[in-house]
Image (cartoon, rainbow, N blue to C red; front, side, top):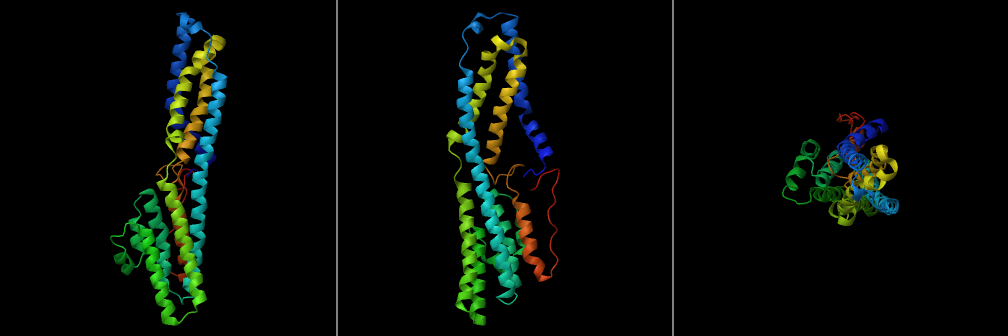
Length: 291
């Protein structure tokens, strides 16, 4: 995720630069055809581009809102994951009698979750944190984050029986695991339900068509400065399309996705520091981007 506004402007400019240059070249071709070669077909009444542009802007605005809603919901659910992992780590260390293996297991859980959501390789972090017995127990499970929660639940139940812990305390701890499972389900819903084609593919097609038609309607009025005016308007729509395209997949391996590795490492440090064991360092922002 881009956290430095200056770096964000550079990245977005670099991403739309090629398309913007192609659009400016097309604008120049249109001006030359109109001003130098006096093409008669270009002297016909222009299309109602302002009306088309207004309708397209409303459509792009709705699409951007939908994409940002997916991104923000993903961030909200990761916030729930963070809070519940911290709560479980605290209770595993206090109410369950300092069960460090369960604390390490819950620290491994967000790494397994980010690997399942983004199809990224977090096996090194999982193997480093997850107790060996649990690693063996979850082999072959399709949903490994859920399998980790199940193994943690078994460990909690074992500790409750062994120490005759009050059932209300057991229920309180189990409720945290249920909240984690609910948040995970919400994240999986976002991953498994992409935006419909009408909001993911169609807008880019419409923007490209609009940028092609735009100089044809402006050249009769702007003449030689058509490339400037057309490029400014086209750049606005290109940036809207690119921004929505980046936000609609919050778990993808891009610069605009949620910083799942950073959040998972933060959870790991917060949960394991009370054990007194050395923890891995926090991930640093690199060139204005959190991974």
